[in-house]
Length: 236
Image (cartoon, rainbow, N blue to C red; front, side):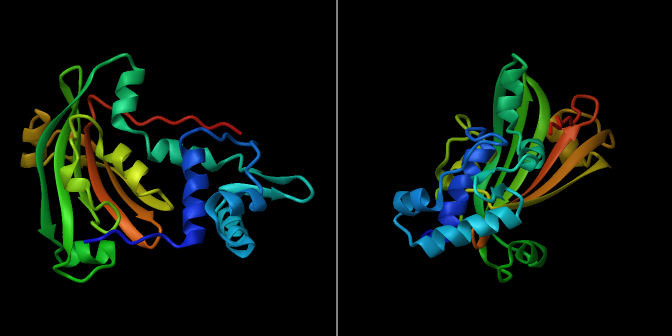
């Protein structure tokens, strides 16, 4: 399946969001003017204006009368917390990250997945299942479905060299995300993958991402509660 090209205004939005998500542009930093974005992307002034208006509505940027546009003060609170790459987390703690890849394959969407991805039942999806380790200790089970329209090369990725989160952020620029975190008891499969006992308490993040016109991914990330805790930093 060939990837669907993002509309011009979505390309501009994805570029701005990536700079903010990656930390290249921090809260209060100036964002390029509409005319600069117009020249960079070869789009009309109307297209650049639409992109910036939508980013302002979404809370990514703040438009200051007479002073241009800057990165919104609170934008990185949610993005930093929700999209912390497990590899980066582990390395920043001074530890070694490794991955056990259990499966990466194409499959057909059942009714529930079709509803999540807004596709027909039976539509083609990619599915990956892997365990992430910190110094040889399992800390995350990554059970993920991916839309081929957003990441057509997903099945060919060497996930011993990168993580699904990192790959998707690079190839399916984030435009929207939803997540929830809850406590749950490990199922038999989850316990086996994580090297814990069945029924042990876990923290489970369920996360869906949108890239342009498509729901790009849906992941269930399971962490042994005795080995992992979520934390965030809030700064105005």
